[in-house]
Image 1 (tube, rainbow, N blue to C red):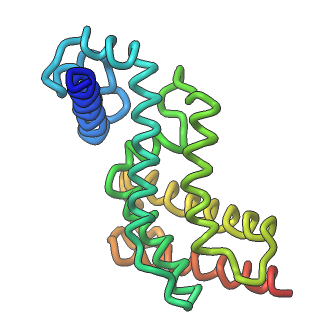
Image 2 (tube, rainbow, N blue to C red):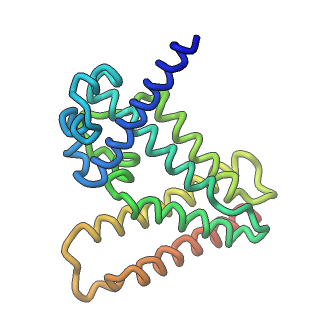
Length: 211
């Protein structure tokens, strides 16, 4: 029994080492760097080690996809308890989401876009991770008087607004700055625009769902 437990623990630790390496490669080299060879080198292992743990690149990508959402869930879970001021609570959620995206834009793109043309996450996995993260958005944002269905719709509209604002911000940040563009190219101005957008959608949704 002890030998089996030790083997299982060793396998879990090795898998974790590979996943940490994959997250690091994604952050430093982008999606293009997510090759079996690069992952093996970053983890201090061989390509055979990658294949034995994940079955190949597709298995690595599925595992990395799941890990990225686990990291988002952890960021949400670290939020302070709801204060009773829902507008403030929603803004805290939104700012946490933005910080998560800006911390590692390649990870964020990997989660919500399709930067790897031949990678389509397993549907059951995709549903599971999206549901887990989205549930936290619902719990934080849903008005007390809203029905379950209204709460889901409220959270979805809030999330798509946050996602849209962040995606445009990241796209602009990756390109040559435009002189004279109305959003000044500094962090404070970008955050203020984001806060204004989240505040506007929250106000509009509150009016809609309280009517």
